[in-house]
Amino acid sequence: MQTFYIDEAIVYLKQGDVIKTVNQPFFYIILLENKIIVMNDNSRSHITVDDFKTLYNHEKFSIHESGNEQEISLEKDKEYYSWKQ
Image 1: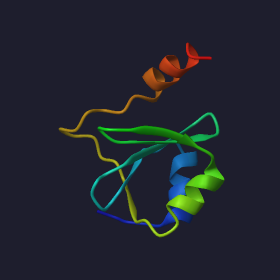
Image 2 (image 1 turned 90 degrees about the vertical axis):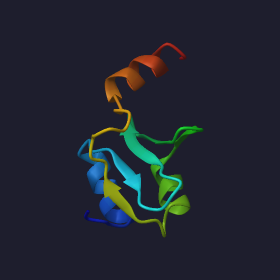
Image 3 (image 1 turned 45 degrees about the vertical axis):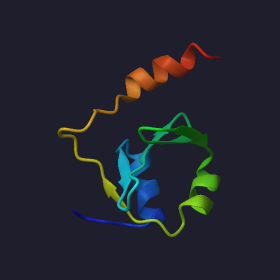
Image 4 (image 1 turned 180 degrees about the vertical axis):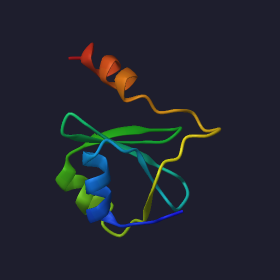
């Protein structure tokens, strides 16, 4: 598993990848319409890219590999949040 820090994390997010924190509790992170969405089983937060850089500056990340874990759907997320506006 390749790990990386915040600057590389931003690059992967801009490419449309889903990343996750390496340390538990795991947080899954996506970029959707210029907002960072940080989520796990218990929470979901929408933050700016600048806030993400500040809050997760010392965190290690890896690319999320789909498997037995619940699949993250950017399309479903976009649909869900569009009706709330």
